[in-house]
Length: 239
Image (cartoon, rainbow, N blue to C red; front, side):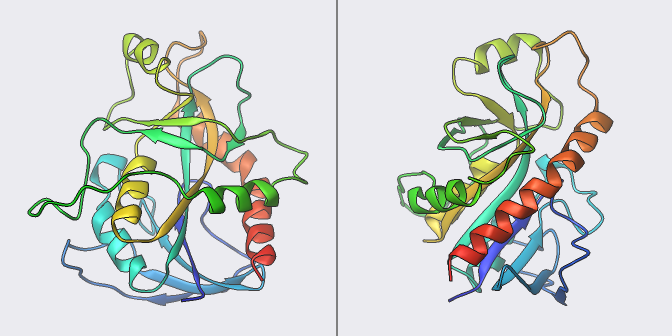
């Protein structure tokens, strides 16, 4: 397999400069994926894109059928880059920024392909893919790129309370609702996985400003140019 899978999130949609051809996938053994698969070319490399939150970006995080999404991708690719959004768990982080997380915490609502059989995988993020994404981000100057963060996945649909955020600060640097599940399922499916995360807000209580969804969307849009440049450089460097 030579194509690269991309799970598109808030900052990765409406690719005006990339021609994508839709392939409908109505069903998998795990149900219906969030969107059809889209095939195209970027950075001189074939890509297969699935939109985590649907073509209209109307599927909330807690309702994403991650098992169906990963199952659909694994039939076409053996490498996946997940693009997602997260909140900063510390005041020292710049918002917006981009992160290439090194690991994740996902104690809650763990999803698996092996609910009816004994299979104990060792979860994690692909070290080589991380290194490749970090290398691709070296020339990014217009937005900070972080490379040592720990991503903490919560379950949604609501955001976290201030008390919960104080607890989560002892676990990691970012808080989101999707990346850990994708990384775990990719490891189960023998698919290499790493992530690019746009850091689009401060988590509840980190600053005095209330967390607003419209601000998250605005900051994701501000990160979009740099994020696409990293993806394109990453694909170009893979030859």
